[in-house]
Image (cartoon, rainbow, N blue to C red):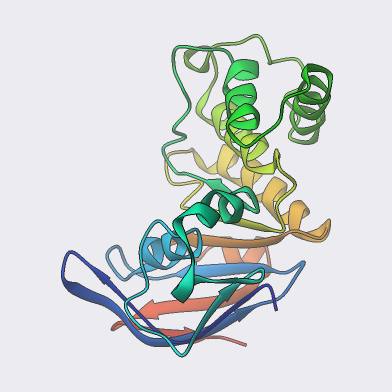
Length: 221
């Protein structure tokens, strides 16, 4: 299993948001995480890259990392193996698309200029943005910016991609294109866990569904 959670509880600001939850994520599967705002979807995802601590658990493992006993020095190593797609993009506005991606690679240990340039070209091609590397974020549409965010998530060839409401700020047509891209990534061997409250997406893009409600997680499979 890529992710194995057993009896995991998560607190935020001294309030319990998830209690005794269990879930497993396999490789190459597209998963939905659905539920109302405030039901714990984002907290669960953030726990998977050690941004939110786990209060207690029987097991909390992700790609060989034990989240219950994870030294701070190993957190960057974990995060290199997880691709994160944010709803609000979080691109650096003062630099080009290329520089945004270069910044991430250098921050995660890449040093050779030729390898950096090759990897950036590869991920931009993968998301259909090969000709946009010189653009500034404000020169791109919302859908284009989200494609760049997905490219950024792919830089270190992660097995797991966490997408938190990736279509929340997009129009329906653009959202459909972004979901097509994410769904194809699962078809190419990545595991994708996508949080959403738009249940209509399930008709066009099949996947396994986890539902957050009442501090619990229920699976529909």
